[in-house]
Image (cartoon, rainbow, N blue to C red; front, side):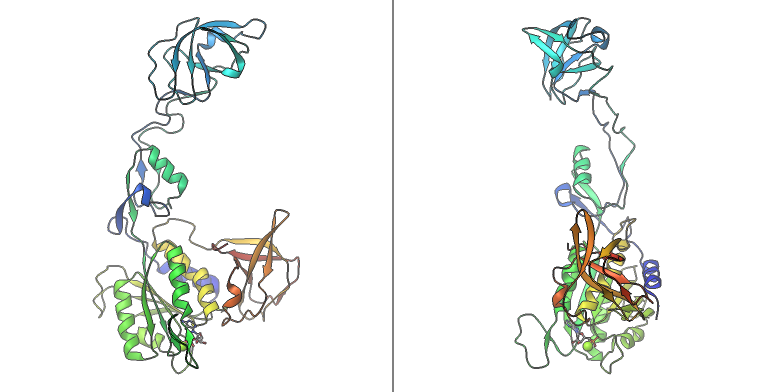
Length: 421
Ligand code: AMP
Ligand code: MG
């Protein structure tokens, strides 16, 4: 049995990120949000592209207006109107100004913008009522970014701000990592699909649906292989197929010590190397982590070796082990270069939290903002790993480390923040 932190280290060490040459695809910018950039991007353009005005006002020569005041305004002749999107035609001479608008190109000869609120206009003349700072409200060419230097590094997730940058740099298409492929199946003779009538002793295979949603949310592609009976022959066939087609395989159930728990034996017979068999954690103790070598009896085409997670069968344990371990493996695999581990916050607990202290314990609940400070409220009802119902509408897991048997109301607790807030 390994500790939770050792399990995390072992898993991260096993994951090979996708290859930045081979495992990529080209996507249109409009389809690129939430994808992971596979190549750094440099722009051929300076930002701003040219000196332009940050305000509506008048483009002037600083030396003409440096002593202006309401009592003794400089008076300048307006020689041109420059709206955004137009190239100025004139060169501003001493005693002249151009009417200019936000984003418009600064005309030659001018070096400073006087905002219109500090001016008075009389026909073709403008009175400057206050002296500006030299070069005030000029956005200088290349002052934000110089052409040819790196704009975005590889290995970042593309969100709205990166998409905006790429659009401005005229990148209509991008090289991104392909989505990691995650095969999912459930094991158990008692399982039926959501639309099958329930006979006595049967339950719905909720894990398959939960894992499909979690995998999609993580940016990976779920490949659903359905329900597999507790039958070693069928299980072996499905596992061999799953590791051949996927980067990561998630099975649920069949990893405990019961007579029908075959998963570990079968993956061993398929020459997998088992790195973790159980973790000092509640829920989620029975957890198998194994790798399948690329050159084995099952004819894998991919040079990557598949990473196998045999998750526990209990529905709450499946969600908790996914959030705690599987997600970081998918993130590292996906090509993201940092931030793989879950985010933990230190907050106050509203309720008393209890554990037997023997394993690191995860209790689900909700983070509430109370006067701008987060507080953890434990979900009501049973925290049995078989109870799925009170996990709905939660957004955090409180963590009691090993040896800690209780946390009192208002005491600080570490919580793992979930994305489904
Ligand atoms: P196992 O690890 O196979 O012994 O399963 C542990 C518990 O989880 C049993 O009560 C199973 O009925 C339940 N279980 C296993 N697989 C699933 C599943 N796919 N969906 C919902 N419950 C499951
Ligand atoms: Mg089972």
